[in-house]
Image 1 (cartoon, rainbow, N blue to C red):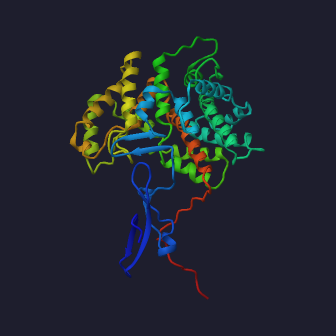
Image 2 (image 1 turned 135 degrees about the horizontal axis):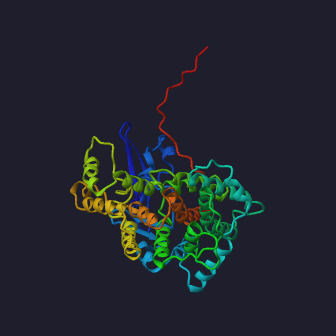
Image 3 (image 1 turned 180 degrees about the horizontal axis):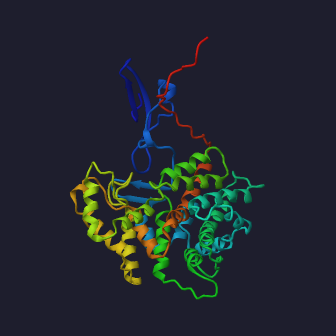
Amino acid sequence: MAENSVTLTDNRNGKSYNFPILDGNLGPSVVDISTFYKDTGMFTFDRGYTSTAMCRSQITYIDGEKGELLHRGYDIAWLAENKIFLDVVYLLLNKRLPNSDELKEFKTELKTRCFINENILKLFDAFPDRAHPMAVLQACVATLSTYYSRDMNFDDPVEYMELAKRLVAKMPTLAAFYYRHSRGYPQIYPDLDRGFTENFLYMMRSFPHSRFELRPIEVKAFDTVLMLHCDHEQNASTTTVRTVGSTHSHPYSCISAGIGALWGHAHGGANESVIRQLEMIGSVDNVDKYIAKAKDKNDPFRLMGFGHRVYKNYDPRAKVLKKMRNQLIDEIGIDSNLIKIANKIEEIVLNDDYFVSRNLYPNVDFNSGLILKALKIPTEMFAVIFVMGRCPGWISQWMELKEQDTIKIVRPRQLYVGPKDITPKN
């Protein structure tokens, strides 16, 4: 019996089975049960994969108990303080941070790739006037696969790196263009004299023949929001990207599937839900009533923006965003009713044993929505912003999948609880 292993005993018949333990560089070890069915004739049951590692990865590490998040070994708080979004994009794609010359070249390359084929604009006309931006963005990314597939070798690292940079560059343009189309505004094309992050805000908020200037704090705040959404280990949308990737689908099809997963209000739509809830509460005077509702086990009401599936401590991204939110408010003079309500809720939750004992700390969604609101981003665009930030992580995860020696199609099994064979017998 190997020392570095786990032995499981079937108490029905006394048979024992031995499975190896695999150690990572950080975090819990895993039990390799890849032969479990072959050895035992049984499946394991893990609803929501809460105790299942579905891949090996070198990209992102989370310690939920400590509230720690690392991208390729770099702490997220350090990255947010010392680097910009495109530094982290480069880090995820190239496995190291760029030097100044590499970053300059990377910025220039993304600028040249940020324009989209004009024919894609015709796609917007096919959607209803009130189509949700996430539905349109998902369709647009899938459509990009028809423009960039012929004669491409998706097994060639050089070619799929080109696909990766192209998608990162075009995502903000697609998002901004559809927003303006949905409002009936004239399109604003990317300005090659502006930076990557600034360009999106410019395309969203500018108008032809007008002077448009952004304060540095606005660009920094938006850049930080994008950075903090870059990657987050094997969440629902990332797992979706890897799952679709395991079928050898077009990479843009994989990203399109990830957008669909992210759209859910329990995932990428959560910051939108936070704002909607703050608007529903309506006044600081109503906060105590809703806190009481949240603590009532018989009331279905739940506070949005608190607690996390993985973090049992303060979400490190939320700490960074709270600091950025306060700085943004101070410099541009925002004193909105929603911020007053949010501050009151946060003050109560962080000092109330009911929430503290349940590890219900603010998560990234609580402050990101408030920052986006302050930046004049419409609420229905919040999940789209999440996609812009998460796209580099998704494509990095897809690239890591492609780098494996072999790709095994993802095919979970089930515990069948339906009727037995009821076919009529002659």
